[in-house]
Length: 410
Image (cartoon, rainbow, N blue to C red; front, side):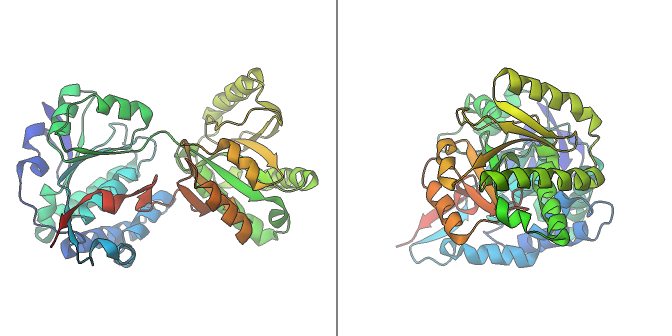
């Protein structure tokens, strides 16, 4: 059973010969200095490379991997390292099933795992052929080829293979944990494979996110504020063409009916202009998707009005429509709805709701959102512009905690 090895070098290899599986000793410890140096060196290489640092998602990755941020993360998790009752140890060999729709997620996935001293096998999509992602692989392999970082040949194996159940089951049987990012369908497939008795699954199901905007603060923005808002909105919604699970699908406008009408029209004017200048995707190729989505929404009696153009489409949900979490076709197609109070969001808080990003909310209103998160649903509450920012706390998991064993000490 051959797989295509992308890291530490590009070659075809028997799955049983993967270095991360073949070597049994664990030299690295949680937040080992060698790991910190490796990730920080990678960060500096990425941030200094003008051919890729212009991509927001790659710049964000580079900043996240800086030593200063890694030290901050360790400090925030001091309970894992400064405890008189246990020590934290690697969970072992970790299989990562990485998503195709968010092309940098594979790096965050193995970064949090190798920070805890684990060996990692990452299955990435064969479709990940964008030049900027290929550049990340090249930088990674150049570093691992250096003598000082050669240990990572045994800790980071990135592979690609087709839909081969035998390979997937072999890897599932020979790893201690599985990080399954591919959504409900992928989770269902991998749940069918045999695993070792103690294999731990950390799964990331299909999720939907939304944006909540307070109308009055938006309407008070000056020209600079409007430009900044548009940039933050673009970052959250248009990176990965709105396909990231944290990108907003529905926008809720909080305020009076007059404020709602003024806000939605003003925002359309601003976003249409800004996104037309900044959105690099070929929007014409998305036009048919949006038309089909709008027709389907009308047939299903979901919407009663549509604003905008091909750059930014607002589909207004009917007032009497039963609340549900909707996923659009992406590429700038947003459902919108007017609400008078945040309590109205309680109708849609369920296990599918991942992120609520927000703009203009008061401290009291943010407290209301936190109270809503006490139900089943809402794993992230973040300001606009941070919807896609990765954190080691994701989908309700503290990944550092999940990817370690606790050795009881008496």
